[in-house]
Image (cartoon, rainbow, N blue to C red; front, side, top):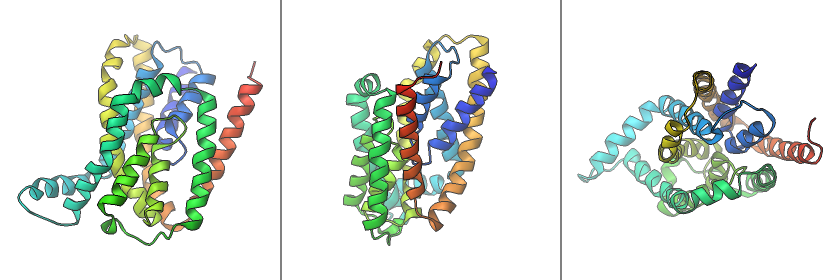
Length: 270
């Protein structure tokens, strides 16, 4: 049964990392109600985040290569759409990186609770409905500028709070900046790479300090593979969905999940 639970953890991480419904929030809930008997739950979660990073890097590998090449060429005065985008991604990464470095441990210990998750699920869900209604959603990524990129980066820093959803809050900020849904989603996913990778790397030592046993390592491997595969699927279909549909459905999902969390807290299962 533990291996089935590990697959569930992996799928949930892979899917929710890129959908605007909060991956950390779902993991907090799963750890609350499913006991994998892990010595270090946080180290387990870090490994799953790395699997999600691997998924988005693989999916956008061609874009990443173009971004890297154009970024390097930009030091010699080269300018194109990808060189500009690479610098915008770097700019938008700075606020979250600073916030994580300065306040990450505090936020992790203080806000890692189901009630905080429930509150943030509701708040960000409400923002989705408002922005879907009032934002103009006309700009492509090529229209993104420094000011708008910084706004998205500042919003991303808020995602340190469990239940916020890094993808959710950055997509909301992208819509606020006037980006089309698909453009906002694509920028959010590209922006996830340095942020999740950086946050995970700083916590990698916890994985080695966790002293996992053979069974725990096997569970981790199963969950890692499930997170990678489900992440690839989620990225592909979310981009397609965002092009054709409103994102309000994710707001309603967040509301429903928040209600479920509150009910489970008030009436915990036996």
